[in-house]
Image 1 (cartoon, one colour):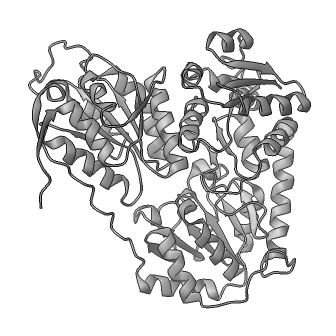
Image 2 (cartoon, rainbow, N blue to C red; image 1 turned 180 degrees about the horizontal axis):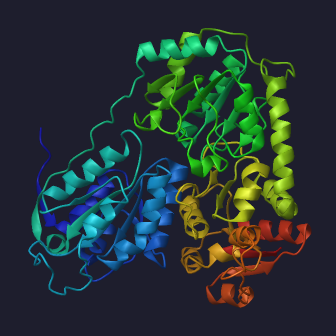
Image 3 (tube, rainbow, N blue to C red; image 1 turned 90 degrees about the vertical axis):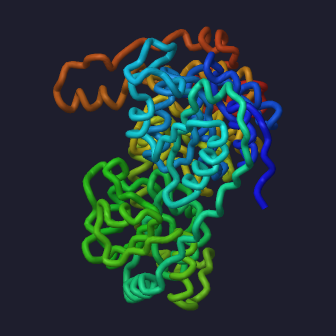
Length: 536
């Protein structure tokens, strides 16, 4: 039986279509062209949160998606608002995060070469099409529920990535007949039995197996652990895979493929199972791993399964289903007891784990007290949302342990700055009972500093820890190594105390561990964000 038709405006059809797909919250900024969407949000039961810039809306939706596993949604007006959000969409694409942007667009019958309409852009859909999975410009009110259902179906199929729906401003305002369109169930990407057999044969004959777990493994954490225990295989996680195997598990080596210990583990192994990982240069930093002839890859994306390392065996399937099938094919083994020091693979994993930790401690030494304080405050269940800052990739990545998947959020690949604060706001909205910390440098913080005001308005208890090296420290280091004169990398910090007050936040300077500990505890109980300024 077909759904009952109703008559409504395009804008209200958007709101009801989002609600029909379980959307509870959106981020956005109202503008002249999208007001009809805003008129329908409350009636559809959707909460709206106001960022201070559309880039902040996109980052917040990204952070929300990472911690909930559901698509994050943002709403913008036309033209410059969409382009403001483009950087966040590019980051979501790079990290395979489902974010849906609903944007107003030029009228259906706007002149092909333009006529100077407000927010007119030469080819907005074309510009965004080069950044996201796809763009869709609807042409009628009736098409809106279909377009939204298609977007949710696409984001639930294969590799999740952002989608943009543009709705002409005249379609948003006009009335039309609509019918609810549910998203079809996503296909079950079951593993081919022949590929599972081949993978099991290679892995079961290995004397020194290892596992590399990427962001695509994060929803199959239990299966990764069970396969690791069955094989006695040490596990190293990528940046986005950090926490897929708890970092106090006896088979965990740690996170970050760029660590020398991970490279040594791969060289020492005669079979490597790679699960949901690009093996990308942005993860490896020091060049590709030597995986020739010994790698089994599990990936939901058939193109990715042969990119950056050609596998001996590839399984194109959902990671959880593939690992479960692999476990069945491997058959029963000795029960793995985490408390037994000589459990299969544990001694080998310990060797590489200690090397990884020693390397991480040395690299993270400038921030040792800060990271120890974060570890104590967050416990096992906290979430770190990090900016692309030295304190994160040289510090927290290796030296701050994670115990759950998607508990370390980082803008990998695209490598944008300004991610931490808005994405942490999104993460806190998605996981309101968990402790969430934003970790930033002084340079990156200023890219989206206005989002602190958004957090204050929403009453979000969010510690924002700012490691201040008075400039762009990584680029300063690279210039120094090249022997170049320092240019554009040094700047005086603003009057942070005055800035936080002006943005409606709490703020404190923490010059030692005791001050940091106290500031963090107060911040978790506060009625708004608290900026904790940590001078280096």
